[in-house]
Image (cartoon, rainbow, N blue to C red; front, side, top):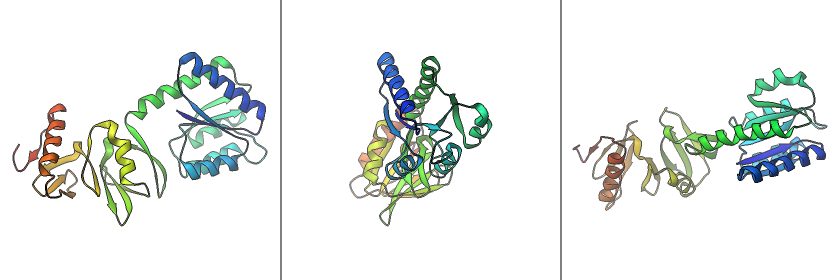
Amino acid sequence: MKIAICDDEISVLNEIKSLLAEYCKDYDREISCDVFQSSLELLTKMEQSGCYDALFLDILMNDDNGIEVARELRKTDKDVRIVFLTSSPEFAVQSYTVGAFYYELKPVRRESFFKLIDRLYSEWEREKAEFFIVKCDNGINKIDIRNLEYCEVVNRALVICLADGTSLKSTAKITEIEEKLGKFGCFIRPHRSYLTNLRYIENISQKNIIMKSGAKIPIPHGKYTQTKERYLEYAFENELFTNVGGSV
């Protein structure tokens, strides 16, 4: 799990880092941590190199107001869990207008901090099995693989097509997404320009895969048998039924 801490007080940063190290040692868990003394550093980092699973954000900093920083972050990352840090409860109501996960009063106490990290870690473990992170034109997205129908390369851009009818455009390489999705066991790459979720296949013929949305995915010459066998293996394992080559 990746955590970021943003606070203009070095003592607070060191305190939380120390508590986090204790937690990881006591519970044998792996958590990486980046620290920032200004909101500008944090925003620049998140814009350039992806997202964090959780963010500890001071509400009152010298250079900015944490609530406003959170609003800016939410424009590109709607999923990061934000934990506000403050010595005063006066901003509690405001903090939840930006989807705060929790509101931690300073000084941070070991017992409450450990419980909070436990909650964050448990939710991260539960979600990582069904989601993957990708940077798209509209910001950083956490995509539920159960809603991912297929990916297609169009004019060197990757178009991610979701089962709910929406699509996202990304600069990611299809090989990168294929690697991320490999652990789920329900994706195949029948064509160099397509990555397909086996759950959404409606029909397989010699030349095409027809998805439940009606999308048609070409099967290159010589790959039909391999594609069909992989799908049938998945279908029987998951008790699915489909038309393959016109027959059940």
